[in-house]
Image 1 (cartoon, one colour):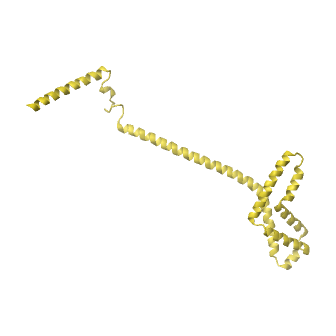
Image 2 (cartoon, one colour):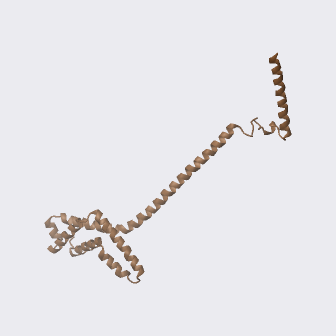
Image 3 (cartoon, helix red, strand yellow):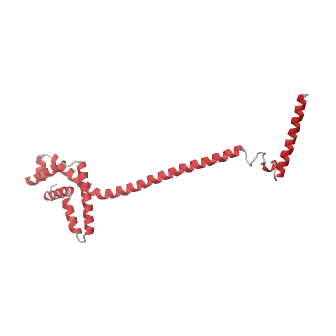
Length: 203
């Protein structure tokens, strides 16, 4: 008897609460049918659709950041390559003639030093010139490749200083250029070889 009484009371309270909920939702101007989507889900979308949308948004942000990083890195590399190429071009123009002349001085003096005495006497007529070639060979061999690069660097820095002073003082350009030629160690060795070769036409 007690169980049937509790069931009756429970069912009546359930019916009253359903009536009360239905009345309050229609009284506020909307009912459950208004907020349900066509597929029966509430709030206009299912959990799967919301999950897919947030996943696409995350994917877009990831791709955006990734391509932004790649673009920045590519631009940085391209800028470094462009500036390195420009520096290489300037350095090549400055060094190609000096390097070629220095190689000729080393090569010719080394080749003459390796010749047998009889052949060297035929090519270089006077003993004085043979001695000058020998001294030039020894002085060239004392200068290592690293030392030659340092000398070349010093020559470039001297040239820059002279150019700056020439722009400050108008009319010194010709005189400054001749002083620069005479002060260059590598240039002196090249000039000495050229004068010796002129005195030895057999070579």
